[in-house]
Length: 74
Image (cartoon, rainbow, N blue to C red):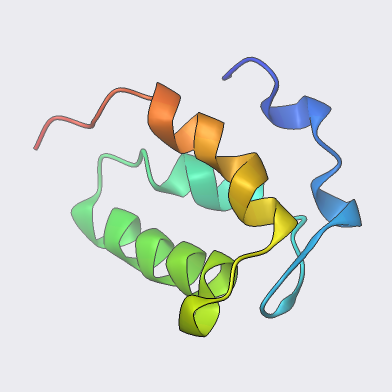
C-alpha cells in the first residue's frame, strides 16, 4: 500500500459526480496489470477529477499518488 493513501479523508471531498470516497480504488485500478481495467479507471478518474476542465480539492490530493508510483510495464 502506498504510504498515506488511506490517511486522506477522501469521503470528505467531492469530485464532479459526488463523493470522492472511491478515489483510492480508482488509483489502484490505474495500476492493474489488465490494460482494459487501467483504461476504464483512467477514463473514470479523469472525468471525475478534471471534468470539463474543472479541478477539485481531490484532484490535488490525488496527484502525489499518481506521480510517485512507477509506471506499469506494458
